[in-house]
Length: 273
Image 1 (cartoon, rainbow, N blue to C red):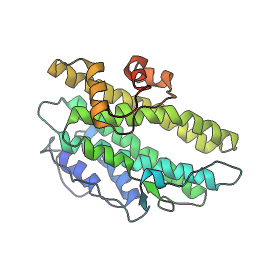
Image 2 (cartoon, rainbow, N blue to C red):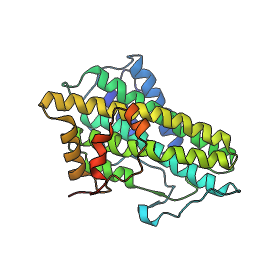
Image 3 (cartoon, one colour):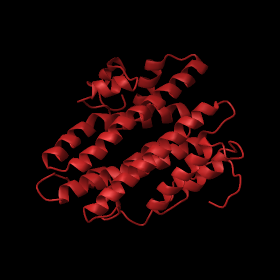
């Protein structure tokens, strides 16, 4: 990465502007290593592209148009599942680096950047795990269509760091904690213990990502003297279209700092009121 002592924001934008998926993941990990070694010129000026660069494949479809996947005896269902999760992880790389590049501010402590760059490094590593696993199964990222719902949530919270934290880690990543254990069980039942192992690693590390979202959401609420739970619930009502739907993985959510009284109130009225 021949960019001398570039700022963190410039390096983060470089990740966002990288089109090739493998290169994006590799660059994300290099940027993380440089930042954590403090081999950068400083935070730099905030700014991020409206949309990150993406490869020509996969084709992006509305969530409702995605083919249904079922894990059976053959590899096709497992490939479809792993491909879908790899796409989520690629989006998650961009989301982590976007939060740094877009919302950089002198008001935020160094620990904020440490946390989100570390999250971005984790997401890049997760993508690499899944990309290699797909290759082992005779497939590749981009072979199947994928949906664009995650970046829709990013666009709708591009104006407000508090809203971004409320929706992306505390709703979308928390939802991953809900659904991943069942995926692991299905993979184990199909005899794919290696894929199940990788998803277990991803699930356990995503708890820390949700916790980072909760931590910095609390920080911003404290700075503005706002109640944490009520403010989060208001932002979910205002900014999240999908609604919060059970079942919830209460144990993993609790480990991430999301007690049940945060989200149980949404069971009866999913979506904006």
